[in-house]
Amino acid sequence: MKTYSFVYLGSLLLALLFTPILIYIARALKIYDSSDARKVHDSAIPRIGGAAIFLSATMLVIAVLFLDNNIGKAFHRLQGQVVTLLAAGTFIFLTGLVDDLRGLRARHKLLVQVAAAAAMCLAGVRIDSLNVANLFTLHLGWLSFPATVFWIVAITNAVNLIDGLDGLAAGISAITCVVIAIFSFSTGQPLMVVLMLALLGSLCGFLFFNFNPAKIFMGDCGSMFLGFILASASVMCATKSGTIVALALPALALGLPIFDTAFSLLRRYLRRRGILSPDRSHLHHILLDMGLHHRHVVISMYVLTALTAGLGMFMMFTHNASAVIIFFCILLLLVLVFRAVGAVHFAETITALKRKRTISHQVKQEIENFEKVELHFRQAKVFDQWWQAVCFAADKMGFVRGLLPLINRDGTKRTLAWGKNAEDIGIDNIVKMTLPIRDRRAGSPLNLEVQVRANGSLESAGRRIALFGRLIEEYSVANLPNKTKDTSSPVRMRPITSNGASLEPGNMK
Image (cartoon, rainbow, N blue to C red):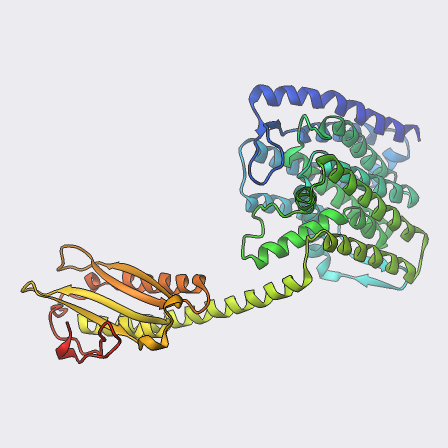
């Protein structure tokens, strides 16, 4: 117990020492987290506080690992896994630090997270099998590797995404450390207890400066490091105990960031945004928009996290189906919380899914039509054939009218036209645009005036115009062979006048 107390108090004191130093360094080097439309702070705050968490925790852990006691013996038994954990955690921390200092693309950070998680798997930290409340044992087989990587990467990003308010990520992570430490102590894993207490002490010391109003943020170097260590530690506990409770307890303690991340990804998917793109629709943003004070939001999420983690602790004392019932009841509670504050609407979600499926079908059909009409442009060798291809493409892609003014060699003007009956088209359902066409003979581009039916969606009309414009650009008049006919030659079409009546080629204007 003395060792445990030393680890917690030592990391706490180190964090209290390192954090003010980092605040001074960040201000001197102007390493700030500037405010923007997505963030809630309105002034520049130092953002490399995660370095204090990293240094405080790892220094104590490394010092204790070489003690001549049960902890030192446990380290020698798991030396490869522990060294890999510390090395991979350092790699994650340095990646986050580079992102805080210079900025990294989301996919690059994701690649680093996957690599670090894969390193843990190669070191033997894998979810091979799980005993589900003594009801049955789930053997993952070859799925153990991707399942472990997914778990570690998911938790890492969940903690990273919840870091949106002063002290929020640090406080929730601290509660998770307590949960894993208690479980590790009860299952005889002193090494995991030391790791969690070291992390807990560093978080408590850091929170002294990070709670609202924050003097420093942990940044990506802190949030990514925290998420990775918590996820990896839970897998190591599950590997040792072989029970699903080792994963269920951290999952419940991190239930808010996990569900917030899941609903954020779903929301971005339904809105057809990049799933890694930032937004301002997280749970803490919604609570702030409801009028709650910054501190009240953070404390409320602390209380809810402690409640779900505390209820989840009952799973440690049940060895039958009751544990599964407790787990799913707590998950239901979390879903109801998100539903109550308006973070998720099931009816709207179903409607959005149907709309997205409709749009996907439209896009597929538009692409197919584009590929069909492109063949006609490829076969066009003279101007008459090119105009025939233009008319065919316009008809196939939902256009309702096209006008191409021309100037003959003798200076007279005429207009090639194609279109459908005007009475079949509502004027409010039409999008008009002029497309320039490169022409070898004309001194300036030809202007093709087109009208396209919106079909209830301006986005669909825009896509079809873009595809049509791509055809006009790639297969313009200027790209026709040199033997192309003069543009003043008669065109064998059925153009129309402005009132929709068809004209024979000889009567064209």
